[in-house]
Length: 307
Image (cartoon, rainbow, N blue to C red; front, side, top):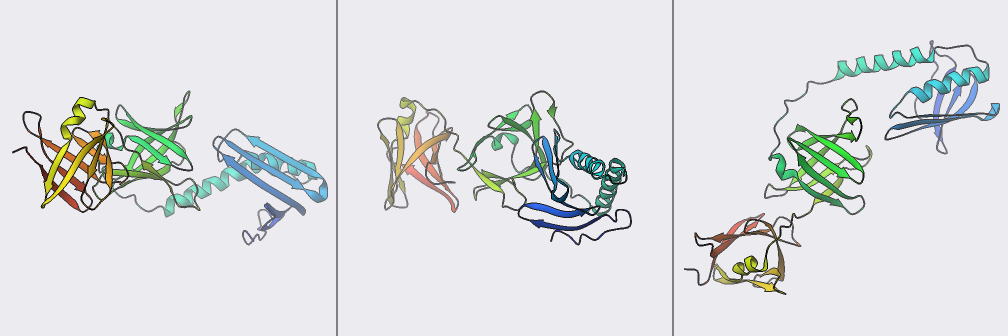
C-alpha cells in the first residue's frame, strides 16, 4: 500500500494506490493501470500500461523532475479510453501551486548563516572514495568548484562547513533554480579538513570522500637537512633517508613511518591521518628541532648537535 487511495469529489474515477512487482498499481477511471516514472539528471520518464485494454503509453522528457510526462500520459489515456475530457494541465498547475503554498506556510525561519571554519583555499584538494573515485575541488576566483569525471559543480557556501552543490553546464552555466544537494566537510581533531560527505540517495547515509595528501615536491639536497637524531623526553627519534629520496621517522618501540612533504618544512605521516612533523629552522636555515603534531597534542624534540 502506497497511500489510502480513496476517490475524492474532484476526481472520483481515480482510486486505490499500491505497489506490486515493481509497478505502481491503481484504478484510472475504472481501468486497471500499472505505471512507473523515472528521473535522472536532465531526464524524466513515465511508462504506463492498461493490461485489460491492451494500451501502452511511454512519455520521455528532457527535463529533470518534470510533471510533463504525467500530464501527457493522462491526456493520451483519456483519448485512448474514450473518457470524458479533463484539463490535466491546469489541474497539475493548481496542485503544484497549492503544494508550494503549503510548503511556504510550514517553512521554519532560516538560521543565520555562519561563516566557514576555514579560508576557501584550505578546502582544495583531491577527495577519494573507493567506490565513486576521485573528486577534485579547486578554487577559481572567489568560489570553490568540484570536478567528478566530466561533471563540474559549483560549491556555494551555506552554513559553517556545509556547501550547496549546483551543476555547471559548459554552455548554459550554473542553474541555481533547482534544489541543491548539500555537501558537508568534516574536520579531524587538529581542525584540518579531512573529508567531504555527499548525500547521493535520501535513504542512504552520505557518501564520504577522504581528502588525499597534497604532496609537495622536494629536492634531494633540501630533504637531506632534516636527517638526524632528535631527543624527546630522554628518547631518541631518528629521521633518516631511504634510497636518498624518501624520509622516514623511527620512534622507539614503534614501526618506521614514511614522511611526505605537505608544506614548508612540514611532513605528514603517510599511513596515519592527522599526524604531522613540523621541523624548526634557525636564521641560517639549519634544522634545530621538530614538533610532532598529533590529535592528542604537540610534542617538541631537539636535534642533537644543533646547540
